[in-house]
Image (cartoon, rainbow, N blue to C red; front, side, top):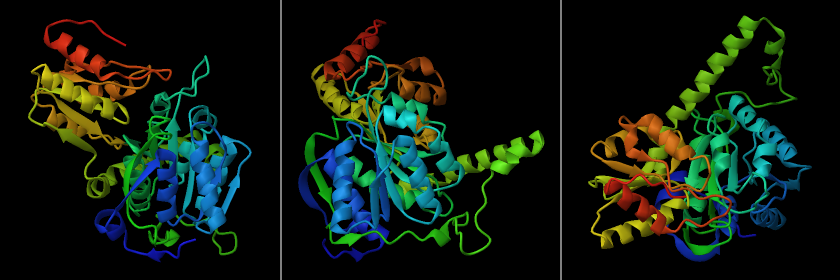
Length: 387
């Protein structure tokens, strides 16, 4: 183990000199955890997440973590991570696809108890016939659990977003769980150039006294109480308490916006902001969209790209502003349901401008030519939809 020095979060995230490494997305996850000063990680294997948590286990063996173990299943992992966070620890875990669904009950519990847990989701297919291939339909199932949600385009994003998620999630006025999502295999098992601060520095330790709710402490009264007894009271008490707490969670996510702006450089990024035609995408679909821009330029069509980094909170105002004069917005996705297009349509006036597709799923690749074809057909007045 390298002796690490604690440095200011601003320095580590924004100012420290970075060194280039050629690593996979799974390795980028472990490198982020190494610099995040994590107390405890708990794992359960599921493809394509398994490799990343194996590497986190290696970090524990080297002395970078205080504790690490394998849970009984994904639900047990998320419950155990919750307990570790309630006790005041900085924790990390990861899952994928069916593991996400099996653990689903715990995610709103994390948010409801205001725990700044960071979980990496390596998204994969969840439907029959079984698929381990990249697909991010599970993200749509997590949209209203109360967690912050960030979608990584690349291994570089994956590394940065995990570290930055801790800093944003642990702010007193936020203090919510954060999910960092990447499209499995396309990011996790592909090598890429990743710029990282030295492994000799790490974030300051988590200070549980900064939490807006007290730490669960069995030795120092009064210990933290749960809210379950409310369910045994009158309906009025139950729904009033639930409603007010839900509103507070939503408000906490809104308070995260300024911190995401600062550390992430905004909730979205824009290429060619003056364009009248946009591709709006998140995750790996952004990479295909970048190539589509190049192909469109050859066709004499100047298009822009909106990369959406933060899914929760969602960049409502930013999208409205950047698309104010847009005539066409095409939304390519790696899922069958088109959840990102629905989110964008819910935000924008004249949402008939928004084309929900092309979409691929079940592990299919997304050729940039499909995006180009969709845009060209729409501009020529056609309505053929291609998947």
